[in-house]
Amino acid sequence: MFKPQPKEARPLSTGRALRHLLVFQLKLALDALRDLALSPLSIGVFVLDAIRQPTLENSLYVRLMGLGRRSDRLINLFDEYSEVDHYTVDRAVTEVEQALAARRDDSTSARDGVSARDGVSGRDGVSGRVAGKD
Image (cartoon, rainbow, N blue to C red; front, side, top):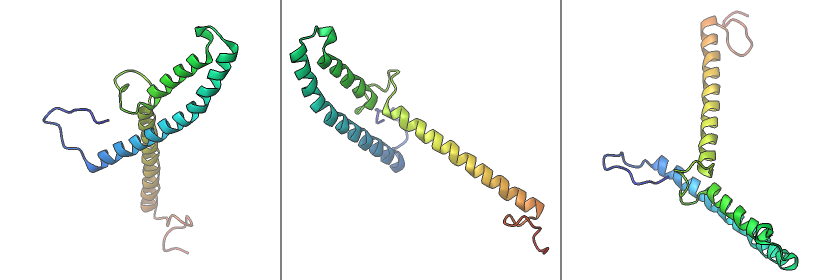
């Protein structure tokens, strides 16, 4: 997101800063939801582990900590995993943006194609009749 840039880099645009803010807010919300889910789960798996007394490899609590680390990499709140090849919320947001842009481009080009055909053929685009002939 906001990485130090070389001195000759262009200034940060308001649109780009807003995008970063919105993505950061999304990440904060996901992080909060994860914490809300992990808190009661951690108590539950601790109690289960206390009753079962499993080996470290079979501990539900240790597995939950692993899940927490994986979700931390996925959320990537402070861009610690951007350089590493992990799937992150940042990549997901970029993919959604690209898909929406492609869809917008497809609908724009389809609409422009219909408009161009209507203009060339002399049809009014609504009824399919030739304009001015009833």
